[in-house]
Image 1 (cartoon, rainbow over the protein chains, first blue to last red):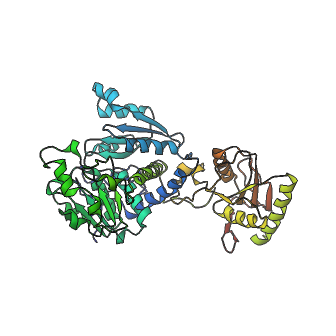
Image 2: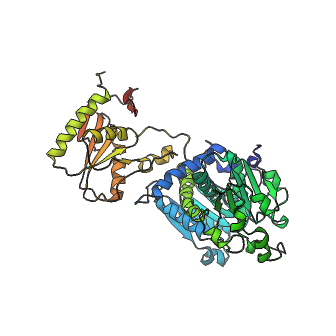
Image 3: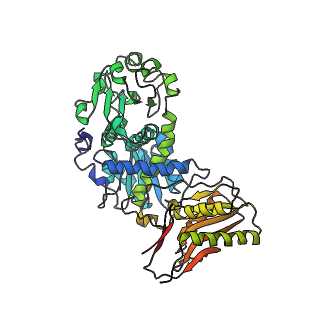
Length: 342
Length: 165
């Protein structure tokens, strides 16, 4: 299969979006998008996260790796899961965490984004974790911060949410094994507004997934999505057939402008992931959802809470993935690692 | 270069010395902890030879290294397996080669994150020259003087062999 997703083509962000993420040695400096990264790098993120998953299962869930580093959480958009797990990840690595409350900060008094950043830089922060409702915000910041600072994209507009995609890959790998080549993965729902779906599609293709499907109404898929290396279905039943992994997306009501849908009830009737429909997938298929869940809109409650659901496992895995990315960016990761002990 | 006895021979000697030390210090129900990777091999052999009741525990000190920011992450770190309760327990810490002492420093830091042991006894198959920290082995199978640019490494797990470079 042609690895279309690794071609850096995003017109929104420009052609250098993928390469400013790596330092001169090819190691992860910023994590802004999955697009354009190598299979090896994604696998090493997953392997590193596996090490941290062990720590998170220990009675003492803390290691001194990032002691003395300061990480600022800059959330310009609401988030609970992502912000909390970034914070926990940083704390379990012994970093100091600054949660900048944007609504109560100088930004609401009219300070510009760059002024806010420069102030945080003056406070000697080592990493910014950024969520913003504008696509490209994290990339914009990464291009303008001082050389020593790393930027992690925690979701920018409808562009990318790379750590979410990686925690989903991690959840898939832990449940289905490392060979993505034999997997059929179906992504259902509002792909048009979903940064999660975009990042997932890139990650799945970079990991050489056998078959990536998108199931959505015509109004909720961006034009030319097949060019991203996916098979498009408008019919839920056909798209779900024999899937190994089913990913339900949240219907993003807050991003919808104009009449893209008749009603939530109508959407549920056509594209809701019900227990009935899930039977079309393989019996051992797993169900993912990035959260927050709209029960009875994109997913039936008994599916979200059912035996095939790995939704809460995704939350747990989010901590390991974020620990991996943070430690790789601030410790400049494998590659030159010596196996010898000191 | 002095002749180095094979690991098996050193292990016999080490087990004997450790047995004596345990009875001499009247250590009750020790917890044996091997440091990944070579230390775990040595600890396994000692654990068997001494027929210890408690299971064998392991430590991976990668996350506690002091050179992390210089050399970066090792992507495949094995889990540390320590009992949840180590307060007031006697720990026998096992490594293959004691060199700079930094590994032992890191291992002790990790152990103290779990609690406050009654004592830590350090056991090394080889205690070589080149210490950079005030750390020494309580029991060693062999004391070895090596130049700074010389390295000795234990390879395994079966058979255990020394590689000198």
